[in-house]
Image (cartoon, rainbow, N blue to C red):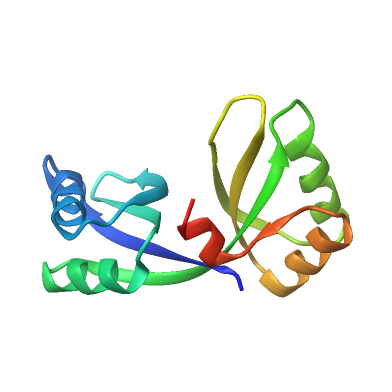
Length: 143
């Protein structure tokens, strides 16, 4: 199973991000990973959380525009060259990375990379063929 990512469209003004974290705190939603991209008018907050259904419901009830996107999570050793090896294999297979973000749970161990691909099925096939551990969504949500 791939990973479900929640994307929230935020006005680029003071306090909007804090509203999301307040909703999550009150709803006992734990953020596992996030990425925030902005323009002059709005931002896109991308999140992996421990309870997608509850998070989506709470956000929509509070007036946020929410979109669900399928992404792929993988583990890579936290060392120089780990990401390069993955990107080289994907590039050779003609798979485009639309965006990515990452986190490290403990320095010197494995990093977790979250990818959005132009062709998720092809990317997952390449990753598995190359021996890259693909993380199941339920396992990622429980981290």
